[in-house]
Image 1 (tube, rainbow, N blue to C red):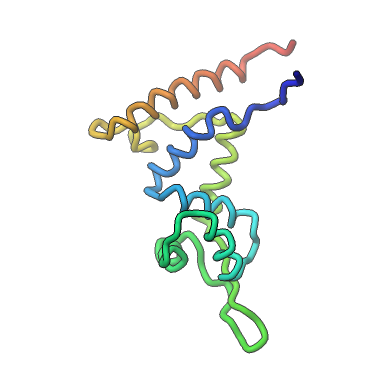
Image 2: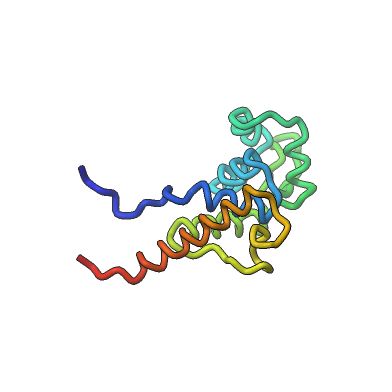
Length: 147
């Protein structure tokens, strides 16, 4: 069996949970941001196409605009539809997700990671243990000698 050079998805669940907790977003919103990241500009129809795959929420589009994840780039006119774009806030989060998938460590400080606060849910405590394990694994991979 041929081994892939980089196991990007090994800690996907941990990375995903970190961002959902840090930015207080739902799984469906997170999935939507991942989809929109590769769309330079999109219409409401494009948004609705992907929204059909995630849990239904009538006000998701307007809420994501209100919360600063997407913005209207161009208003509609007689000949063209309105165009929307992901904000820098949203784009930076997804860029950061890719950095984590490529081996950057997840912060463990109280200031940068709400999972490390004292009064958190049991689930967050389980995830923070896994974050420490993931970070240790990442450090070991970085310092491995080439075979």
